[in-house]
Length: 603
Image (cartoon, rainbow, N blue to C red; front, side, top):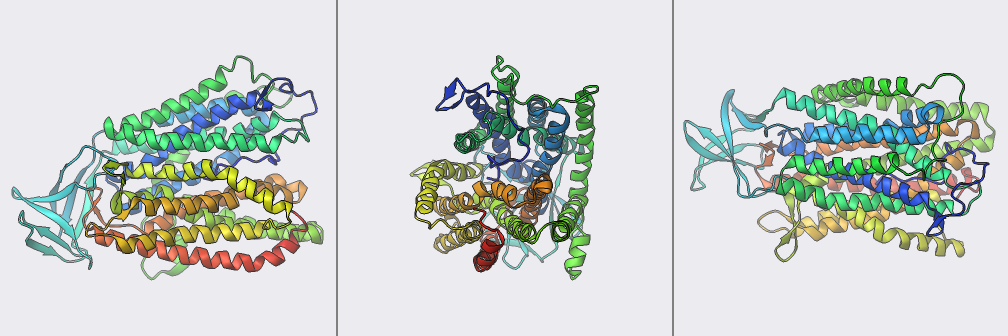
C-alpha cells in the first residue's frame, strides 16, 4: 500500500510552544496519537473495503468489459493520490489540518453512501453478425463477488445455447448435450450490456466525491500526527510507525468484512459498511472532547475566514472530476499500428494531464537545479529524480492488486482455503495488509541489525530489491499456473505467496520514499518535490490501469467463457511484467553505486 506517512513531512509546522501532549501518554506517546490512529484506521477501513469491491462491481453489476473497468479503476486511484496535493496546500494556507480532515471525511462518507445506489444489475446481450440476442445468466449460487459456477446462455427463438469462448478468438454456441450448434468467427460475437445511464451517472458521481474528499483527508491526518511531537522528539519516528499500523489494520478488517456483506446481502451492503467506517472516522475527530484542541488549527492569517469559499470550491470541483471520468470512459482505443505517439494521442484528458505534467516537471526541475543549485545539490536532485522514475514502475506493477489480480482471483483461482472453507475474490486483497502487519516489525529489526554492522543496503539498493521482488511475486504465481487441473484454477496459496513476496518488496521501498525526497531535495523547493513524488504515485496508479488492460479477457455479462483463455492471458501478461520488473531492478542495482555517490551521505 502507498499510504506511508513520514516523520519528515516538510509541511509539518515548527512547534516551539509547550507540547500539550507532553504529560499524558499512550504507550509512551502523546495520548492524542490513539485518537488519530483510530481515526485513520476507520478511514482506511472504508477506503480499502470499497476498493476491494470496486473492480468486480464494475464487471459484474454494471457489466463493463475488462478494458473499461480496469481503466476506470486506474483513473480513480490516480485521482485519489493526486488530489491530496491541493488539499494539503489549502490546509496549510487557510483551513488547518483538523477542519480539512473533517470536511474530507464527510465528503468521502457521502461518496461511499452514494455507491450503495447502483440500481438493477445491467442486462447482458450479444450482437452476432449485426443481430441482437438476449443473454441470460444461470445462477448456481448467490455470491455476486465470486461466481465461477454461473453460465451465460444465448437465447435464439426460445432455444438456449451455452456460450463458450475458444482459444483462437472464435465463439461456440453449445447445445444442452455439449455439442456445438454454431461457431462464430473471431470478431463476429460482441458481448454488451444494457445499463441505465442514470445509475452510471450515480456511480461516477460517487467516485468523484470520494476523490475530492480524499484530497482533504489523506495528507492532513498525517500532518496532525506530526504536530503531536516537538522538534527533535525522538518518539516521532516510532509514532508514525504506530500510525502506519492503523492503516493496515483498517484495510485488513474491511477487505474481509465488506465482501462478506456484499455476498450475503448485496453490493449496497458492502459499500454501506465502508461508509459507516468513514462516519466513525469523522465522529472521532468531530467529537474529540477537546482532546485535539491544540492540534491541526488554522494558520494565523489576517482577513476574513475563507473556509466557506473553499468548501464551495471543493463541491464545484466534483463535476470537474466527474467530467474527467466521463472522458476517460469514452476515450476510444488507439488505432492499431499508430505507434507510441499515436498511443499518447489516444490517452484520455486525465492521462494527458498526468503524463504531460510529469514529463515536463522532471527535466524542468533538474535543469533548474543545475542552474541555480551547487554541484552537490544538483547531483542529489538527479539521484532523487531517478529514484522517482523507478518508483513509478514499482507502484504501477504493485497496484495490479485491485484490478488484474482481483480478476485473476475471481476467474482462475481456487479460493478454497482449508478443506471446504472458501473466501471470495475481493477478500484475497487482505493478504497484503496481513503480511505488512506481521512483517513490518521484523523488517524494522532486520534493518536495525544490519545498520549496527554497517551492512544496511543503501536506498537505491532497497529500491532495486523492491522492483525485483515485485517481479518475483508475479513469477511465483506464473509458476503455480503450471500445476492447474482441468478447471484451470491456481491454488489460493500461490496467490498468497505472490502477496507475501510483494509485501516484503513494499517494505523495502514504502517506508523510505517520502523521507528520501525531503533529504535529497534543495531546501527551497522541497514542497515542490513532495508534489512531484505524489504526482509520480498518481501516474503509477493511472498506468497500472493501462497495464491491467493488457490482461483484459473477453467476457459475457461479466463472466469469462473460457477459463483456459483467461489463464493464458493473465500468465502471459504477468510474465512480461515480471521480466520488465526484474530487468529494471537489476539496472537500478548497477546504478546504485553512482547514485550513492550523488546522494552525498543521505541514508
